[in-house]
Amino acid sequence: MLIIAFVALATLSLPGALAAQISVVDGVVGGVPKANLAPARPNVPMTSPTAPGKLRAVENSGAHHREMTPGVYQASGYGDLTAMESMWFWFFAARSNPSTAPLALWFNGGPGSSSMIGLFQEHGPCRITNDSSSVTLNPYSWNNNANVLYIDQPVGAGFSHGTLNVGTSQEAASDVWKFMQIFFSDPRFAKYATNDLAIWTESYGGHYGPTFAAYILSQNSAIAAGTISGIRLNLKVLGIGDGLTDPLVQYPGYIVYAASNPYHPLVSSSVISRANTSWTRTSATGNAGCKEQLEIMTSVAAASIASHPYPPDVTTYLNTIGKSVGAESTWQETNFQIYANFANTGDWMRNSRPDLETVINAGVRTIIFDGDADYILNYVGVEAMVDALDTKFASLYKQQTFKAYTVAGQATGQYKNAGTFSYVRIYGAGHEVPAYKFGNLAYGQAAAQMFTQIMSNQPLTPT
Image (cartoon, rainbow, N blue to C red; front, side):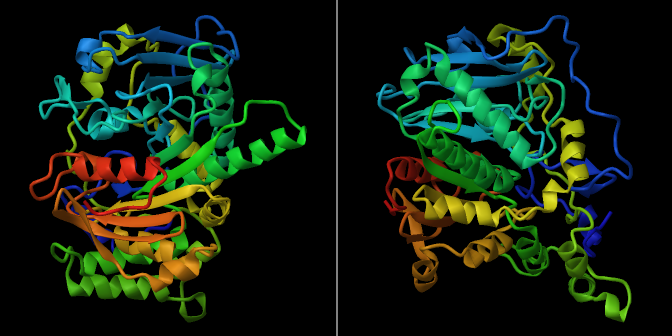
């Protein structure tokens, strides 16, 4: 197990730095078990096999305490991939013009974390209250002008249940594609198949997003060539927030951000000095340092910090309403077995930047966004990854200077546009950007403007 030298940060509690999408193992955020866990197994007893290839849904369940806007359709339930693998979804139609509105898929990270985090803590039609007991209407919900489909994946995450077979982003991509084939084959949702499709994700979504999008493009090509049969997915947008995409490029950002960020230094100068030494040390001068170990892909690395309790927990609320919305298992924020599966395959350290470059070059409008108060996937590392992108827009991007991103006249970040690629750093936001507010803006208001502009196939524009 490789741990970056500044593990002294384990005593640090940085507000907004980290949500619960990255598991803590032996006090290390993003750590892995000292030994492999038991073989993958169903996360709930399966009393009888389901019918593969079908969608099971509860429609418009208790709309008074989920989607509070009258007349807005919702459905939740399962897509059964196999007799022993059921993937949970929760769909919300757009509040305006759902028949023509684009469809956005949302995936939280982990790996193994539930997308109900995004639904109830970030940008869904209702948000969890501070006491975690109920929800309130979210006027800046992402379903204002888009149909939004929240998916718990891989199987075993959140309310999804069954055999835990997935341990790589590529395997996860295959299952998501299978789910979408089931979803669009259902008479209730087939009408959305020709609408524009978007993938939005965060955290480990820096792996998921590029991998899922590239896989969809390859499947579309195979369908067009007649080598496979299926429903073409009309992918137009990819959005990634606070994502881990290229660990080798992003990890040095921990040291830089800890020493200098918009708020305050996080550790002493002596800790920073030791971290720099540990990062650059080579095997020629002794034990290999972190950079050299990462380069040879020997294990998983992450800085260690203490988790902060914001945004409010949703566990009790979700398990209270679970049965009424069609859930068949006990909800858990992150499935540790899935997390371990990904750690054991080395997927964590895979560089997903080539897939991201493929997607950008294919003409998919892409945005990378990051909160400037997030430490665990800080903007220093994310911007280093963005600067390293080798795409048809790379030269144009490098020529741009950061401009102020304003929302209703309030400066709320810095951004660049280059072709169909955009990047924005959001002020005052932690790991879950839409969960925060800044200045005189409301919770999620800045993220909602960003989302709406990109989903309208427009570059970022200050207002």
